[in-house]
Image: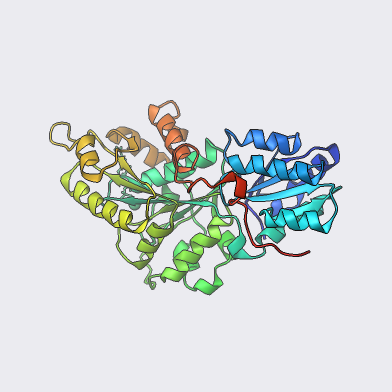
Length: 400
Ligand SMILES: Nc1ncnc2c1ncn2[C@@H]1O[C@H](COP(=O)(O)OP(=O)(O)O)[C@@H](O)[C@H]1O
Ligand SMILES: [Mg+2]
């Protein structure tokens, strides 16, 4: 299996650093993004104070088990929940091992370690699919058809991958008329709907076959447009596709069609972030309000985001951002003006804003919004847990 993990490692010795550096030569990890920061556990604890957490964090601490314990406490305060932590150390006793595992460390390796040891440790963290680190799912839906939701989804996927250097999979769930591939100037090998015919069959190998690569960090599952008569996918199949893709990439950007059915609902409930795009007209406002009420009732305290697109389309007769804020109770996270010239040109060239209009202010706005959606600034990152309990790392103890 080819992993698309984001991995950051903090070695303390040159030997460990070399073993880590060779990881991405391993076929399984060629698509993973590995960053090495020399300096061990103390460096890691400092690093995550103002940097986002990757899926895997590998830290070396060659001190005593107390040093490891203290280092973990410091890390727990700054690392986002749900990340896998692998510790490399020199303490070699079962007691210490058990204690670390019970604190939630995913794997503990006694140094010196080889590249194969590290690969095996990562693999053992994801053996059980349900324990695999989960990438973040960002779903886009239009408050109406034609409001620009797909345009925004593709641009955010591109921005996360190209400007923020994250591994992203885009899934276009508009099986017949989806434009994610078209807008990125891609020709999908196989339509995504065919991957969904049998939930049981969906695994990373199958998904890999359906992915069309846009660049080193961005691949999409889309359609080249098709009116082929095929059965609607089951909720189970769509859920499984998303589950598998989020184990393959740090971000999954889902473009939902303007439909209302079981699998659309299921994606809306599960996604980490929902972006509803609306235009400044009454029908958009009504439908966006319906959507927001529905989402609020099912997604607890998670924020749902509003994007007001084509905001100045009708100058005089349009509704304002304030009308939306008063009705929905949230301000627009992003307001985009009506610019038919720009969007027609980009669409015709199969380019994203960051490609064809790099110096346009929208490029920077998209970058900032992608950061928010990515959980970097004010995103939905779950409740902060007590660092004392290392709750973010906890899993049942196992014996060696
Ligand atoms: N801010 C904008 N100004 C002008 N045209 C836009 C803007 N945003 C999107 N569009 C255009 O609107 C059309 C519909 O966009 P699309 O993303 O397919 O909408 P949806 O997915 O909501 O149906 C496309 O032709 C797109 O290029
Ligand atoms: Mg669309």
